[in-house]
Length: 238
Image 1 (cartoon, rainbow, N blue to C red):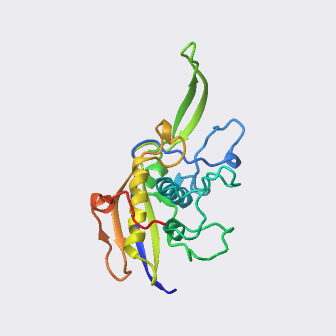
Image 2: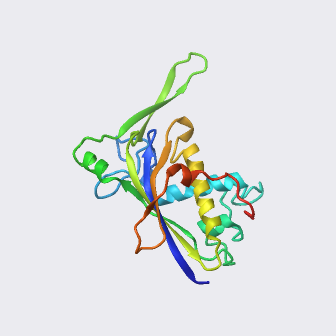
């Protein structure tokens, strides 16, 4: 197996609704928010972890093709596919428990997505404030809101720069791999990124997508609709 080329896919992620990607319990402070978002530890700027972006794209593809652990008796019931044989495992990688090596090296690398320079400047100058959204439960008898919970979000309109690298080896079908990634991106636009997606958070849009197959050539900007206009079906997914 030889590395044939590395394809770079980059562009903009625009938030169409508030985004909440949680920071975890380790970030909680006395008197702080119950659900803070993840921020850069030095600058304090919000960002989108590559693991969140890659993980959501993979999970949507696995749901579409039924490529997840669906055995009720399995220890990792509902977990990601780890067969090492399918295209999803080849592109997104397998867990350490899979020792077969059939999938080979992970093809897709997803970088952390940071705000564009314009939005970084607004954040630095205090022109971008993170929003606090309160969520409640509704008493079915009285109809009143109860138990408000503060949820921190990056507001709609903010833009992030995303970058992905796709490693293509001499035995790979380049079109098949790119088609799978495009499908995942298209599905994500119809779903949600981060937490609380069923309650309005995480609606995103990809734009200004560029593809570069040769570092010596200028990036070719792809029309967004053409790039994501893929049939949500892929033959020979097994």
